Length: 284
Image (cartoon, rainbow, N blue to C red):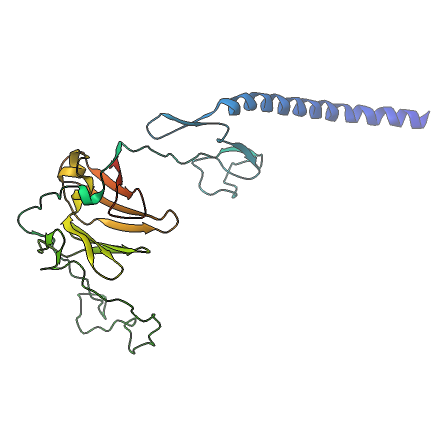
């Protein structure tokens, strides 16, 4: 009789605990049921409030100890923050389509764009010199990083050395004259060609150093494309050879007129003098 009474008393003590556990379990199931439909239809919204992708790629995950957006440091508990798991939304990057695109004739058939008249000189800003006392620049100060000895030459031997675009350079399309400073040269090497840009002109060379196209104004690349890419030749283009795709990419900005543009030309084949794929992107 004494043992039976003690067992009944223990069950009465456990009853509130069991009730509370059941309520917590029910609350957890209700919370999951409410969150699941929301995750199934959640949409990622870009900066312009337009839907980008649906929740098949927009995952909702529960990470213990992690913080929501706007908190200071993930994984570190802030004052007043609980240890309960919180929902974190993994959002995808927004990819914008080009504003306009087309395919050009082969570069060899495009009419060269007219060159701009007059000179364009950008002021060269001096590099500040270090000072010994931290005050005004001191021309006698010695930079501790200056190399004091000539290192062993480890570069491979040069196979071909030839002149690129410069003042008086002559190619199939005429002679180049310097009209801007500094020169801002840029170029890249492919399996069979070297493409170089200097200021507002570019040329294509074979691997023997013979110019097979150019020099012409860089906006010749966008002849027939229209707009600022065709009409403006603001210079400082970038040339890249993509060894994986075996394609050439040349990009130049247009800032002389509005809207500001980024103009891109991609060779349709490994030959940089062939047809080009044109792309235009607005610069915000």
